[in-house]
Length: 76
Figure: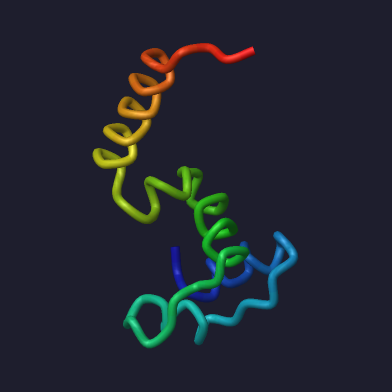
C-alpha cells in the first residue's frame, strides 16, 4: 500500500491524514496518536497489539491473558 493510499484509507475513517504523516511515522520522526494507531490497525486488519508487537508476540500475550483469566478465582 502506498503512502497516499494509506492516508486516504485513514481519511475514510475520519482522520485528517496526509502522506507526509505516514512518512514521519515510518522514518521515526513522529509516532501516531492513539486514534491514528487504532486506524492503522483497522486499515491493515490486525489488532493493535499485533501492530505494536508483531503477530507472534500478540498471540503470546493473548494466551497469557487467557491462562491468567482461567486461573483467577471468580468473585461475585
